[in-house]
Structure formats: C-alpha cells, structure tokens
Length: 247
Image (tube, rainbow, N blue to C red; front, side, top):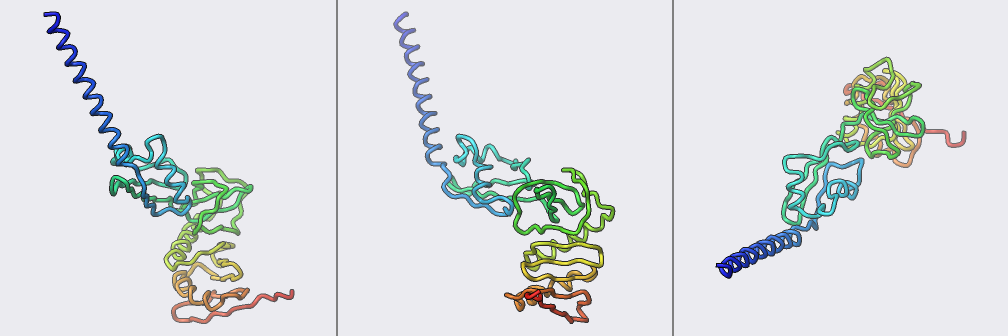
C-alpha cells in the first residue's frame, strides 16, 4: 500500500513537471516566434515613428505580438498629448500596424517661450516646446494670459472658425504655411518663407487658396507680397509687390 501511494505521488509529480515543461516550451516558442520585427506607423505628425513605437511597445514584452494583441484588443492607446487614440493591429506574428489619430489642431500661439496649440473652438489643448509640422503659428491675436484647457481669451470667437477653415484649405491643397497673421476679418495674411500672401477679408477663401500652389511655384526664389484681396473666380487679378532689398 505504501509503495503504491509513493508510486502514485511520483507519477503526479512527473505529470506536473511535464506540464510545466510543456507550458515553458510553448511560452518559449511563442516568445521566440512572435517577436515583432516590422512596424508600420501611419497618421503621425507631431511624434516621430520611433516615438510612437516606444509609446506602444513599452515594457519587457513590448516587442511580442501576442502580448500586444492581448494588451490592445478592442482598446486603443489613450491619454497621450496631441493624440486622440492609437489603434494597434497585428498583421502577422512578426508585424504590427499602429494607426495614429491626432487631435484636430487649428494652430498655435507662442506664449512665454512655449507653443500653445488650440482647436477649432479656440480651446488650448496642448502646450509643448516642439513645433508640429503642418500646424501654423497664429500671430496678430491679442491676449494677456493663457490657461491650458480653456479658450483663448479673445472676444471674437469667429476668429477660430476662420483659422480652422484656412488650416483645412491649406491641407487640402497641400500647402505648408509658416504663419497666419490675423489682424481682423478683413486683414488676413499667409506667410510662406519669403512670400507673404495678403488674402484681405475671409470671404471666398477657397477661391483664393486653391490657386495659390501655381502662384507660389512661379514666385520661387523671390521675396515680396502677393496681393489677393480682390481675387475671386470672376476676377482673377493678382499683384505681386517685390520687396525692396536695398531698403
């Protein structure tokens, strides 16, 4: 009886050890064959591809696709400045795709040596010491203070809608502007390196901006102001005023 009991215990221990070895073997196989070697990142502007990878693939198992699939299953990456959400898709055991959905930024203002980014409604949603490609600096607005999470202290809230419309149009026609100078509804200027484009009022913005790529190409290497205050679909007259480089 005693020998039989010892034999049963020995069998159970052996089975237990075999199960442990099997689990470890499976674990080792999954770890070694699910190591991510290829990462696709799309939709990122503010952060580099390497920065996005580091945010998503963090921790000891951050380069294991099986772990990532469980971690981000039906769940995006949230609470990252400038980003609404990031989706992670496992394309293969060694390949993942990260899709970045950034916050919709109308522009930024420089305040106390910091870039303060605001949305289409004028709310300051992020502050940073890094400029985001494709988001223009807005000048000409007057304010004495800024509070993160609150609206820019400007009386005319239609300003933000106009700035957002301009930003969208610039993106639509693949134009990257350095600054948008907004003095009033009737005095708006776009600044491209050495070329200033005086749009005048905020009327017929698309008619003015849609033809800008052609004008800017013709003005490459020049310095001055392109006057489009009276430009429209019917009246396509523009005047370019060269800068006086000797003054």
